Image (tube, rainbow, N blue to C red; front, top):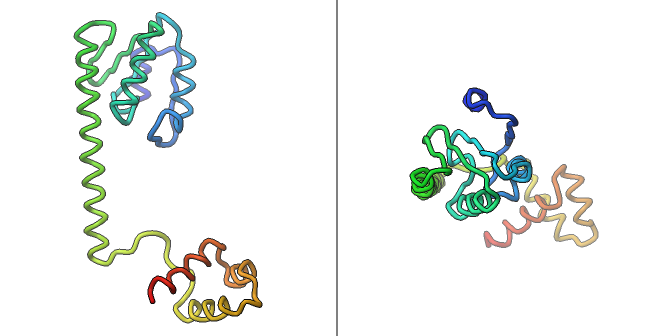
Length: 171
């Protein structure tokens, strides 16, 4: 993507290092939108890099339009400074959201199927069954503070309470 932006002779490049689902979580996007001025053109490689859903895309597009800022999407050959470009922009935004929804559904289906087959998600348990039984017995003795138990077993307090809740829900 950086090569494409360099070929497009972008004066300044903003790059996110992590994924984000909304404008609030994407500091570089926020900085980019604050940097742009009337007459500028925001150049991106792909539409789905700008926004993760149609609402965010439309909000960004409206902000750009109000401030007299154009948008060019290199991979989809969109230029919102033209009527045809604006039409394509809106159509591709809807398609991008649809694709994200399909991807999310496939992911959730895969997770459900894996769980049905007994696949465990998350970090492995830090305590053996024997240690868990011992921990639960000690936890019932109100003389030992929960924070001390967590420290003794090398687990967080959140993990301690999760282990203790598993016992009560399993009964």
